[in-house]
Length: 150
Image 1: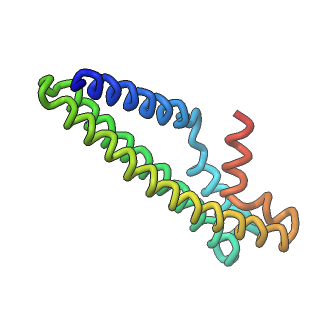
Image 2 (image 1 turned 90 degrees about the vertical axis):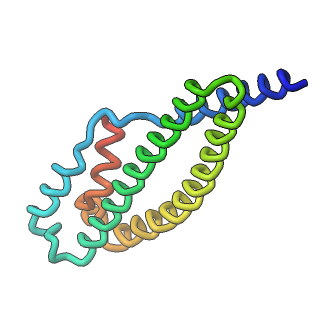
C-alpha cells in the first residue's frame, strides 16, 4: 500500500511538472529594451505623453511578471533537486514540498494573470479610443506583435 501511494505521488508529480514545463515557452528574443528606447525617441510617443507613460508602466508590469515566473521556476528546480538527492525515506516528504509549492504558485499566478488581463484589456480599449496610430506606438503592443512575428 505504501509503495502504491509513493508510486502514485511520483507519477502525479511528473505529470504536473511536465505540464508546467510544456506550458512555459522560452522567449527566442527579447527586444523590449530596444523597443522602449525607440518609443521614447518618437515624437508622438514621447515620455511626456501620459498615455505613453501608462504604456511603459504596463510594459514594466509585464516584465516583472516574467521575472517572477523565472524566479518561481528556479525555486521549483531547487525543490526538485532536493527530491532527487533525498534518501528513500525522505523522498515523499520532499516531493510533497514540490507539489505544495506548485499549488501555491499556480494559485498566485492565476490571480495575477486575471488582474493583468483586465488591465491589458482596459489599456487596449484606451488605445482604440485614441485611434489606430496610438496602439501602433504602444511599446507593449509592439512587443506583443513582435513576439508573433518570430
